[in-house]
Amino acid sequence: MLTKIKNIFIVLLLVLIVTQFLRPEKNRGSYDTIASFEEATAMPEEVKTILQNNCYDCHSNTTRYPWFMEVSPVTHYMAYQIEDGKKHFNISAWESYTDTEKDHKLEELIGEIEYKKMPLKPYTWIHGELSGSDAKTLIGWVKELREKAKNPPVDSINVQNPDSTVVDSLQKQRVSAVY
Ligand code: HEC
Image (cartoon, rainbow, N blue to C red; front, side, top):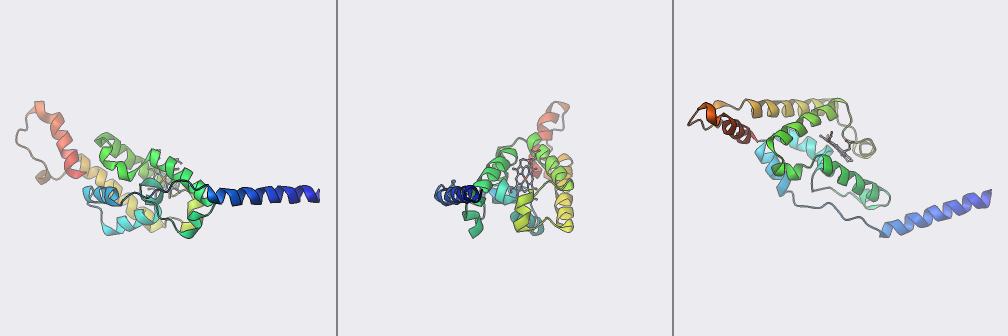
């Protein structure tokens, strides 16, 4: 029995050592893509900090890599979460979403925070939970942004011809004026 446990332990140790050398590709794009999201949404500094500390690591092309993220199996686990997270919501790809998609992502974001699903659990063991006040700030800002996109201030709309036939394109212009 004891030798069996010892053998399993040795195999696990070997796997751990070998996987240290099998490094997944890093998610290290430039911050420019995030900056254009921040600019397009006129994001306040406070919200920027919350997203930087809790969300961008898995939802953008720019992940921070503290030393423990370099170690297997953490590095493999994170690579998987980043890939999956970006598939669902990638802030670096914000410009490529349609206005409807943008609105839908923001709606989902509110739900994920309200139901305390994000940031993902194992991540918070290291980075800490999203505090109640940060959650409130983030949700408040996202709700405001969605409202603004639906009812933009009149001066941001270029109304030259408020004809009913151009209502559709006008609606589009209104949304783009905000995002
Ligand atoms: C450790 C990686 C990680 C972190 C950090 C993280 N997420 Fe996620 N997120 C994921 C993964 C993986 C998914 C897709 C699977 C799922 O929904 O659980 C996801 C899904 C989402 C979705 C899309 C849900 C859907 O229905 O498609 C939104 C929106 C989201 N996260 C927002 C956030 C926000 C906001 C933060 C920061 C407060 C955050 N996430 C932090 C990994 C992460």
